[in-house]
Amino acid sequence: MELNDVASDLKQVLFTEEQIHEKIAELCRRIEADYADEPPLLVGVLKGAVMVMADLSRELKLDAPQDWMAVSSYGSGTKSSGVVRILKDLDADLTGRKVLIVEDIIDSGLTLSWLLGNLRSRGAASVEVCALLRKPDAAKIEIDVRYLGFDIPDEFVVGYGLDYAERYRNLRGVGILAPHVYS
Ligand code: XMP
Ligand code: MG
Image (tube, rainbow, N blue to C red):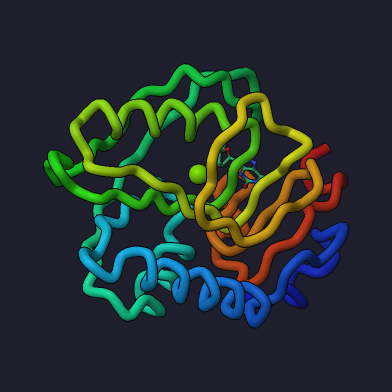
């Protein structure tokens, strides 16, 4: 689905498919250089990271395996609390592995902070983060993101894997959701 197909549901277009692909290609060149010795295990966080993982992993000129986790963050409404429950765990053993977490968006940072601690405690050789989007004004905890796509305003965004009530995940670009959709 194109940004145009849901134009009236968006307050603002942030990134087109082309801009996202260009950015992902940039990130991939850096990842290739940094992991020339040994491809990382790409760990995607369901469901939002599906599109980033699909495009990033295919753009990458490294034979990097994928694994997936599903977590749910307890919280009121749309805000996460940092108390995280694992809904689907990884299949892989992380002992001695170089792990690269692939995320769609870092909002408060609480979910990712918990995830970093969790994966590091499993004996990974290294755990780094690649995130397409980050809301710096929403940060409750500082996270060292090695590979970042774009910083965005503290507004609710949809598309490219990101949903509102499971809608808009299949949107090719990313936009700020118009208030009339959720109010
Ligand atoms: P925290 O606050 O723990 O939350 O960094 C990260 C997770 O919350 C979801 N999230 C969003 N989903 N549009 C969305 O569709 C947004 O603007 C948004 N902000 C946070 C997302 O699942 C992310 O992994
Ligand atoms: Mg997510």
